[in-house]
Length: 211
Image (tube, rainbow, N blue to C red):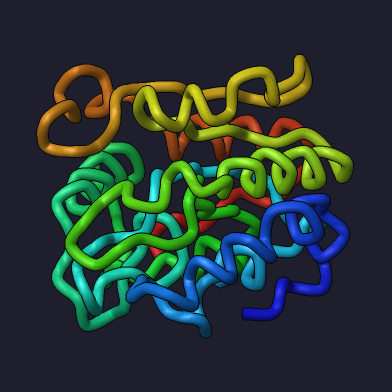
């Protein structure tokens, strides 16, 4: 559970992480110590071009892999991710073959949950532990390296990122892709092609969302 070196200067790791780490020693939690900082390990701050904020890891054992919305290749698609792929196919014609989104992260998509741990079977159990400070500080650090595209699905993500986007950043804020809300503005929003167009207009390589 060692913080990634590239992000290690964030105030969170000196001010909040020790207390959270102590609490984790006394309970069962997901996704496990080797994946807790997977999103930060996969995408260093200078490589971030797109920010997708999730809420917390999947509470089903075997599902959470440390990247927001992502699951291991052999895991059936959760309902929200299935809807994300449906919109991706409608938007660009293709979607990944599995729910493993690590290829997105390798291209500069920061797949960061606002809480990095969860109690099995109890979504949101660690949401008030202070994890939110990490997500805001990480985004601010990434902004030091250039404009970002924010993909904010649902009220939680929009609240978590409030005040962070700047004039030079892009913001796509829609309903969450969950089955309860996807038809209220998520479907048909075409976020993937819009982000790629924005990136290309600034001289950045587009994201290959299909891999």
